Length: 132
Image (tube, rainbow, N blue to C red; front, side):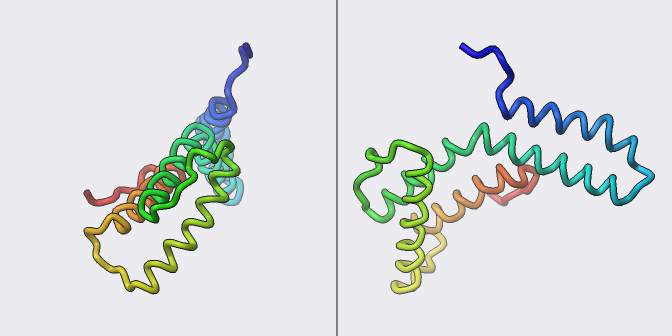
């Protein structure tokens, strides 16, 4: 067993250091303050991605398989495999939306699209509020 901090914990610790120690020290320099703020934000994204990405990606893949009635979700073992399959299924879904001119906001497809957007925002900008 490893007794070291996980990568997400390390990112959060560095982000905390940037926010509490570096940002106040560089506040006189707009350029350095901006770079420190961007770095702080990027570390937050990386930490959230490390913690949540696999669950969110597998959830998206499950929804896509269900919507498109596609078999084979059980065969996808690695995260790389799941991401590749999501790319393929998203292309199929986009074609389905275009060719069938699907635009019903209460449909399962649009619920999936909205949920995927909410999940992506939970990683990139968790402060973004979506209307419920």
